[in-house]
Length: 353
Image 1 (cartoon, rainbow, N blue to C red):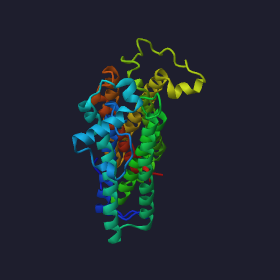
Image 2 (cartoon, rainbow, N blue to C red):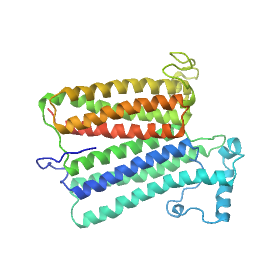
Image 3 (cartoon, rainbow, N blue to C red):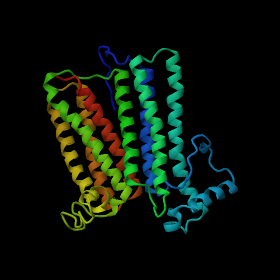
């Protein structure tokens, strides 16, 4: 994303500092990478391969045949292995283990990349008081994300379960998105990215904020799709198994639980919400393209437009390919990139009145 430098210094809460901003952008990028690896971990069925939470010693993978056999034995005690993976050998276990181990390692590396530069910038007195408060919030919620991730894994180790709870999966992804967005917004402020104050653009500001909010909800709906494997409920588009409205939307009781536990309805609402988000994103970006806006707004709008079109195509291909691994992974990271571009657009419009 191209970012134009501000012609005038930003007021508090932050001081323009390219070094601090780059550090924050790197952390946001690492969170995006972790979301991608997390999606691949889920898509490959690897999330329950490590049955213990060891924040420090867990950084070291098994280094001997005996260590691998010990880890495999722990996995063999899980319901997932007993019920669906009994034919999995040691080599197959190793392939799923590495996905989950990499996902957890990225989380630890993010903590290190956060802590060491923070201490350096603090020593150099480059962290303002308000920025230090924001960084404290990021640190606390980053730690909470690790705990939440283990809480999610625990749900998949319960008797008779072969996958994690879709509720906990949505909470885990949701917090990652919020952290990504909060860090990205702060980085834009720290680097001094330009924000327009054109009164003619003020009417677009609430729509940009709405797009960010709707994308967040849509990504949570996607987490329920993933948790229920609802992407495979229908493999055609634009219909659902040949029907325009899928059958059995409210087969479960009570009725409201269908929105979270019925694969047919979860799939239907994710697609339907996607159409609404796409219409809003396309209208907003095209309207701004025709408006007498400043360069940062136009550039951010173009990113939203391009990523929306790509995301629409990826969503269709994910369904018609029956959730093929590379396409589904691109669809997930594409959603986060579109969220980031929309947040940038909302930032660029945030001073218009």
